[in-house]
Image 1 (cartoon, helix red, strand yellow):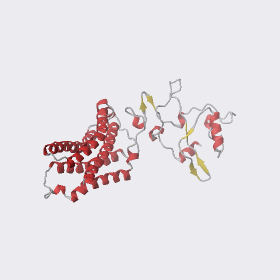
Image 2 (cartoon, one colour; image 1 turned 120 degrees about the vertical axis):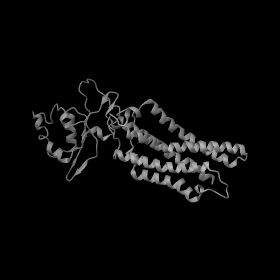
Image 3 (cartoon, rainbow, N blue to C red; image 1 turned 30 degrees about the vertical axis):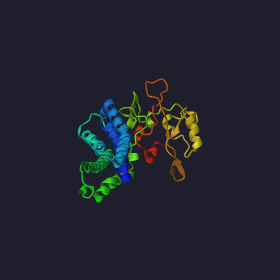
Image 4 (tube, one colour; image 1 turned 120 degrees about the horizontal axis):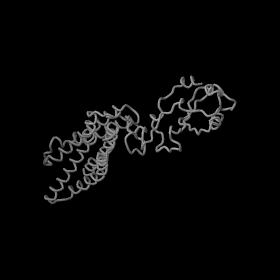
Length: 311
């Protein structure tokens, strides 16, 4: 009985911490100025820091309630446990309290659609999970408030309600998170410190531009025999080897990087290279502040037919 109560009060709080992180990311994506503001950032940091405290808090006083025999001390411990149950109930509904107003209040800035999946799906998943967890937390709070004799337990203390709201709801949420792949849907780049960082568009005045072939200024050719730039692609070998392509690019003075695995194309393969270029008006070398992890950084995805037109 004691072990069941400990797991019931401690394990579910971890999900509340996960939901708090997801809530913060959604608010920062929808309302960057508010989401990245110092007061709100400190608030969510305080919420996350309180999670370990409330877990230990509930475990300690739950154990004491089983071994303390003094009625006055038991009454005091019961009050402390009610505070812990109320706090965890508030944590369970926290995403709904923040995400709902965020979706209603209009914003002048575009939504930073980070990670994978539709942004609307992120909100639906988080809201549904928070609602399910709130139901379980509310049942536990009502069960703690009501006082019944052991011989005449209330309906809310029945085994069916205990196992349904105490464990089944959490299992549903965890299973849904696994099926929906929240690790991909709510992923954000490392080192985000302000508005725009979720999509790697702007950071500390450094703008990441989509790179297209038209923006690359060719300063040479492969064989140095006066091939016109418009015929640069036509002057290449029909099916060069990897080494020939690499050597040709190095002759131009570029430092390429293969950003995707080779694409199988029957008797040949397609290699996709990326070039880091300096922005106009900047003389010295510029160091990017984060790796290009977001697909938005590279602009549109070109099909095989688009590459064939260039060739």
